[in-house]
Image 1 (cartoon, rainbow, N blue to C red):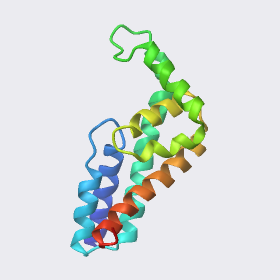
Image 2 (cartoon, one colour):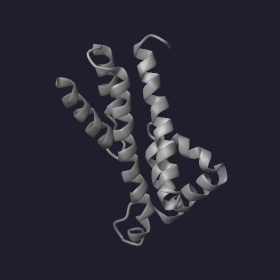
Image 3 (cartoon, helix red, strand yellow):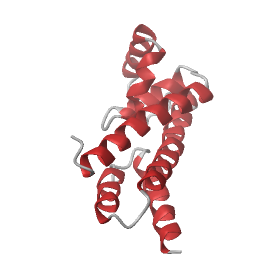
Image 4 (cartoon, rainbow, N blue to C red):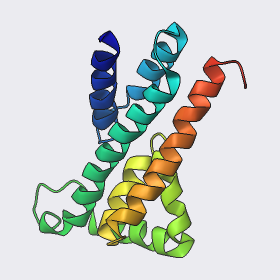
Length: 145
């Protein structure tokens, strides 16, 4: 029964770290893999699910960002928003696979929302990129890399 509690905590940490809050999932996931007390594939699926959900939060922030961009307190200049959109359009939808990368993933998710990319396409790309990222961590813990 303890495993379900760990999975729930991992899920919520993954949701939190996929938003604009600094990431914690990688550290927690490596620690959990290293204990060998939990089924690694279940940890992987849980982290990916939580991380995709967190990425969708950023996606929807981008989708509705125009509501706030005219406000005085809004921290991002219009030119930066336009530049981000043009980069996504120039490199195509394949660049959505970068949404699972540390540091730039949040910007990719927000830009995808601004550009009105299909939520299903974004979710699929997020799931693929985050699965690769977390599977690489699992592989490192198993000594494959």
